[in-house]
Image (cartoon, rainbow, N blue to C red; front, side, top):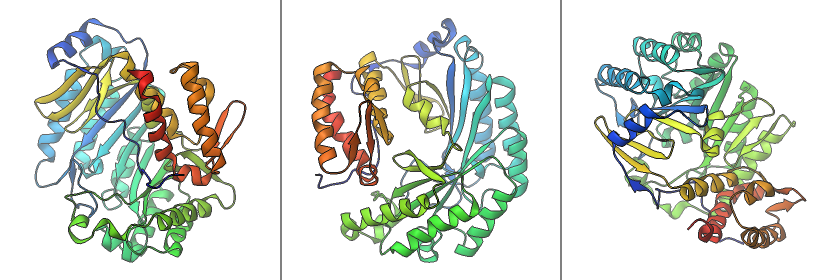
Length: 406
């Protein structure tokens, strides 16, 4: 049905936003209370001490900048917590992304985590997450962070294959990676999640199945799994071309990983690129993001929204601020619905006309004919092949429905 696979979801830059500035944003935060209590705190740490070969994102190799950056984050916390709007929020998710947020030393983490706990209203059920590499998370740091309420780690494993780890420029050997992850699991009973990359050059079905088996044996709560993205400017792109990519191989490796994870019946799809141990990982950060709740962005490279204001922190003293019209917000919330294996028709009807829905239904029927999904009276559920093509389906839906949001 499709010739080219879209591997990731990206709603793009706002197409209809109105220019604003920091002064207007701060005035809004100082004179308004939130209409919705739930919120997300997103902290970005644009530093790594080892750059993955496939990476070309907003991060740099660390030198001696952590003290200064820690001070900057603390200043940002003080800045925003003085506003009535922020004081009126109850934050259901705290997410540290990067980069490698666990690159901070324990002295930095103690200051930052203490400030978060003391100055923001965190809910009793707050999901407190850190992205991390294995080598940046020792047991001493783990205990400190857990004592401050961190209850979810997302560990960038990528693969356990020795050849794959060398190709992707991972630090640990296969054996050392398994051993370290086992130690983290033994000392952390909260949510432990892993990121896996498949379809690097010459990866075999045996290798991707072994990755799944190791994760299950260790007792991982969930695993993100992504087909290797080709980014211009990365080290990988300097030594490889996209010619190695074959669609059928991509699909075979994707389905093999899913099949191995699903054996035994303990795991299921949480979203298009995440497999979850049943009733274990809620992944509140992404779910709340998809629902359109406020996200306070802190740190260089962080993006978010507060009320109708879209925000992106470009540098310490430079941010892009725009006012998002309701149709832009609705469009983002609508397209986010298609990041999950199950979609309810009533959720779609909240955003589009009945004529638009019927047009979509015809598209879904074509997908069903190609065994990508099964339609029921309330909505549809993707097949495993449908999950593989999920972001492509989402892109096609966006094209079909674009006129509904103009």
